Image (tube, rainbow, N blue to C red; front, side, top):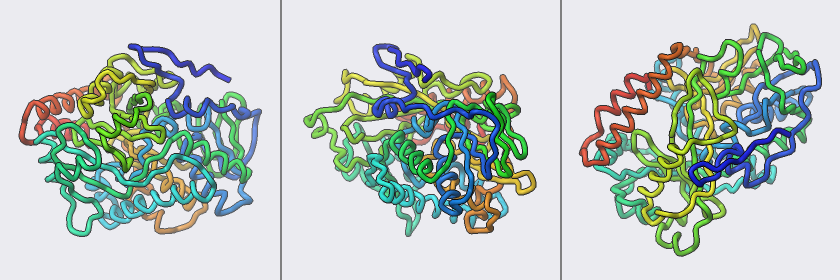
Length: 463
């Protein structure tokens, strides 16, 4: 088995893929692809998109011969490193999706299906006894400056929305974030432990006869086949489910940009600290900054918190087994202590990072060309934990040639616009986040309205 090493940076353990995997112990690697093979469906990528596609295809037709090819091990990528937000958040801009053939109605259906998918994932965990530390008590987006509060008011939900607006006291009664002025509460969200979810789902599809080959990096995909160093899988349907690792394929470096996100996790906190912080409902927690954070209270009473850190590596490079640089660890520690001053000096137990897939228009796509049998899904821009379930169901319908409500959603068969060549995309992404950070500094310093720098960053990036 490869050595997914944990190292120490700035006094904090980092690497080893993620805290979530370290908590379970790294898995035993399944047999690599031993040579040329044939199948009915070949799925490239052993994350949640590929596993959900395998789950729903094997459920719809148990006779299908399905092969999953994974370069490292199941859940090595974002599926085993994310913040554990099983949310109904739309992966991208409503306005951008609405410019597609289905218009606003297709976007509304996509939003409804995402909300439904939260409960579908929970039901699968319950049905198959997957213990993924599920706690469904919603997500709280807090405003801690006047500018953030103005952004909250601008995004205030309309009549009939499930999203609730809370004032400062109501927000603090849930989680005592320092300086909270108000918040948005979306009840359709659940906390999970990502590695437990992805490994549990892998066990289920294996039990159905799906063949999973790990340590089997795919070098190229062509109509009817996926090519590895150790062999080729031929199949009439080949589904590319690589999300942020799409640039590792030949000719795909500019398709989706691998955006970097990083996380830290504290040691377990004692009861007296939780008595001060509240958070008894274990809601997911985020803020309304331009460069926002996302956090959860874990099942073993830690705080896991993430943010962008170093957003992008030149030429679409990815991290090395989650190892995170000192600057990012310090930045996330500052974010944690700004939200919870009580935690100043509390040791961080682990830091890690990973990549998520970002399309040029910041909107996800699920697609399959019936002429070639080539399909793909991804580009979830950091909102993929729930979206992967819906993408897997959509890929099922497309692969089986069925015309359903899912094949008419706003993200289905959307064209993917390619990113600019280097160094333009490196300059663009780093410039965008420099503007976001500058906007947040101005807003924290007392600006009473959202900084124009944040809006400028959105326009420049096409978000």
